[in-house]
Length: 113
Length: 118
Image 1 (cartoon, rainbow over the protein chains, first blue to last red):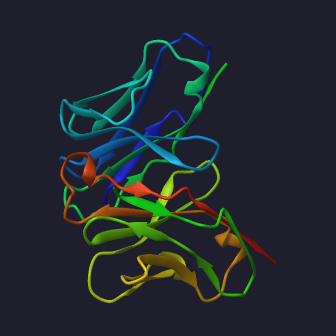
Image 2: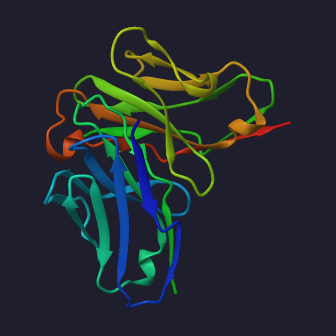
């Protein structure tokens, strides 16, 4: 069966420091991969998605970037964190079929101080 | 443009009573529809989806949802609520025709907090 791993679970970083969040998927190949941010425990904001290695689409201009160095690995990065980057970050994957659901990781709670 | 509306920020239900969490959608074509549940500090868990066929879809944990094309709704239901059902519920839609590029991404509602009291 397929599983998704996301780490770390929590992270406290000072303003101006770099960020790297990692997500990996097991048990499938060529998944579509996604990074979401959830603020205030409610709405989801799609940040990036990827349909293949090296293919990244950005939905919202951010102080963030994403990379997909391997088929089942998706990384969210920042060179310099802002206070406004605090939030709950969720990685997700789905199969390529357009009726397939998203499957989410357990999320990373990022607090920028 | 695609959109999803969850008109209730919060739904309060007594344990053992039936529950309904409402969702309406807007897409240019026919939709794929999904429900997710989120427990505190956890990722979203997939509950059920409507693709085609029977308008009543059964999912995990005893939940079901009814697709109503004329009312463009996909309400989540459960005959008898449990305290453990208390969580945040998200409805999501994807246009089954215009799914290329970013249009293939799920559009989520803002979520409805379900509170089940003993």
